[in-house]
Image (cartoon, rainbow, N blue to C red):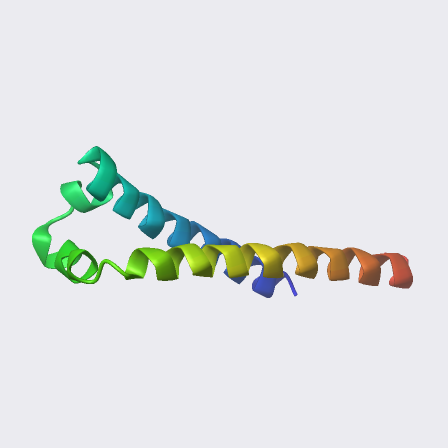
Length: 81
């Protein structure tokens, strides 16, 4: 159960990083995609729609994490841990 919680946290961090990197690239002209070499960021820059995928992934992971935390608390209360 803790592994799933950690995986959801990692997914949220990764998707938030990608989305913030797109925001920095398009609106602020600095950030992660400006610092990293073009061989790494070329894929991300060529597919601008990935920013929306990252945002949707973040929202889904956030909703799953909240519902998972509620289920964990309920299970702990029932078992008396």
